[in-house]
Image (tube, rainbow, N blue to C red; front, side, top):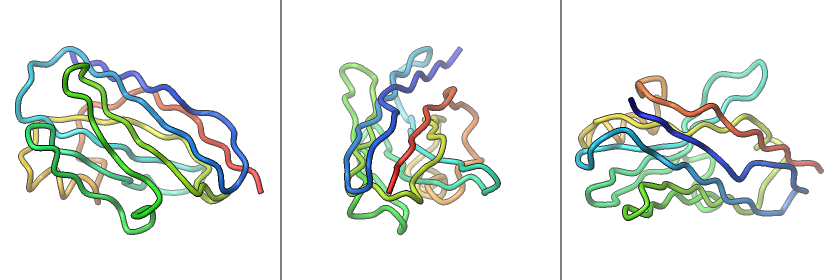
Length: 129
């Protein structure tokens, strides 16, 4: 069974930085796409970024490109989301997600995170002004 465990959430002032981690277990290495999405109360789920783990090719949503960066540590089956220049509108629950997608579907999942079959429990990010 695939398990994804997020950590690194918390509260920060606008302009600050946080790094989220997602430790993955329960699947064999291979064609795995991992990503991050967020959901704020009363708003739709929003894809942040995805990474195709075999080659580290990655995609970021327009709303966070230049501020957020997804990366991975294959040796430890961990994916990160470095978040800089945080804004109050970044306040949301952030989720790690994974699935056995090829690169094309991994790109699509960065725009449509509902396609992921596996996700973690989420970690809250609160940005104050």
